[in-house]
Amino acid sequence: MNENLDINLNDVTDGGEPPTDLVGMVSLLGALSDAEREAVLPGFEARVALLTQPRGPASGVIGEELSTRRFVVHAAESVAERTRGRSVTGRPFQMRMAAAVALLGTVLATLVATRAALGPQVGTTGTLAAVTGDAAELERDVERLLSVYAAFDGDSASELATIFDDAGTLGDHVSSRESSDSEWLEESL
Amino acid sequence: MVGMTKGAEQPLTSESGFQGLPADHLPTDDLAPILVRAVAGDGAAWRTVVDRYGRRLFAVARSRCRDAEVAEDITQSVFATVAAKLSAGEYTEQGKFESWLFRVAMNRIRDHIRRVRRQPVAANSEIVAEAAEQRAVGDRERPDETSLERLREAVEGLSDSDREVIELRHHGGMSFKKMAEVLNEPMGTLLARHHRALRKLKERLETHEPAELPGKTGGTAKRFVGEGRIK
Image: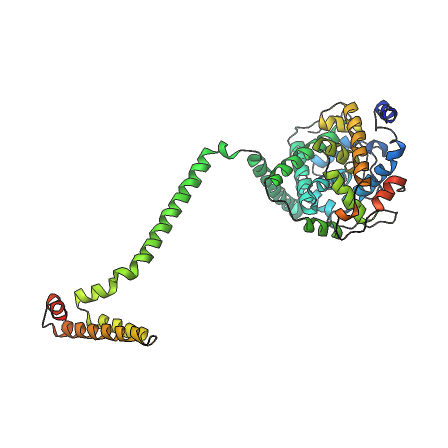
């Protein structure tokens, strides 16, 4: 083994002939190299040459097209060069911006979720209708209740019927305006 | 502008029948005038440069990333960088164009590997499927794809420094002299490393059990390695 290595070391150009027992290995690597080179996609050389040609005196449409393509390639290259190998900690401004955007998104999401959760509990529409005495809106509420009522039966249905009756009574009070809301509430209680 | 002080590069086209021999063994011509014409906008001259080095760069890149499209992207990136620097007059041809080109390529490949290592590894089945798709064709006797796949795996198992020597020498077709310029190491060191890497590959292929590659029929690589049958 050492003798073979000495032979290789004496040849400063290409390493000389490989040791006898490694000839097969070298041949197999040659076959692998051929396979790797043949793995190129169709039109490889033409495509690479077209996209990377150095700038020169352009002429005609083809020249302009080449310049445009080169610009794209060089721009991508430039971006890659600028961003390659930089650590995240080396970009405090970008980090701050990303953190600010993430924080803003979180706040917005929280607000939206809170409003969605509180909406049904507050019952904004019904309350406003009762205060303002808008009979038409009360009727719409009743219709909604009826549509919900149709989907239930048994205990739930009877409760809904009671609610429906109360709503009807409230509607009558509002329409006749014979008593204030507080009086109606006292009667109901 | 590209200087013309010296040019001793060798032509290498995809039809040259090149089989892993270093470029120094191939016929010679003068590269400097070709580069001058290419920088001046001569598309044919630039195509000559790409024909000469494109597939060698591609083979080195593909050996490392196992993906033809990524290897082509890397190759394009290398040529784009070189073209930009040539146009900017940042290179003077002094017979070291090939070394410069491959140095750019190795840096680009190392960058790619660093990025990939931070990401999940592709499923082995995908690699095997791609290897099957890339089945080589040729009119000379060649080991089957299974054998080549085993050799690829053995090469992958080498240390980075050993692997670079194998890939530059065989896939890149470089002489040890050029490799020493690319890797910035003494030629004797590279010769010894190459010799050691060949032995490791041989040992790994000879001790490789067929059961380690499910669904494949093995034995061809060992036969080729042991008998030195190829060409």
